[in-house]
Length: 73
Picture 1: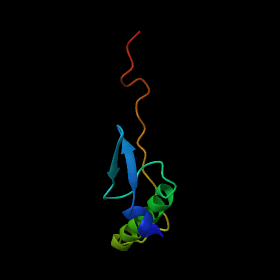
Picture 2: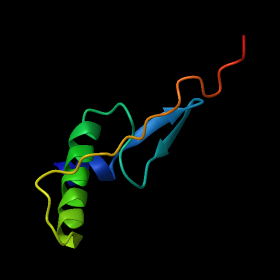
Picture 3: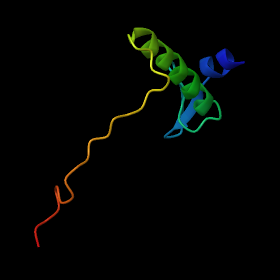
């Protein structure tokens, strides 16, 4: 079923129909499940490359200065 949905992903733009040949269109019911499957496989590959095999992958956030880009008053 997944293969059928991904291979027959047709959408309309400017009154013309297009066949999406790679991935899935945003807004389809299949998109969140497809993204979850992709990310699960991606995380597995990252863990396999890691020498420590972490239990979870956590993004690292760096704090920004409070007034960066703000106009001076």
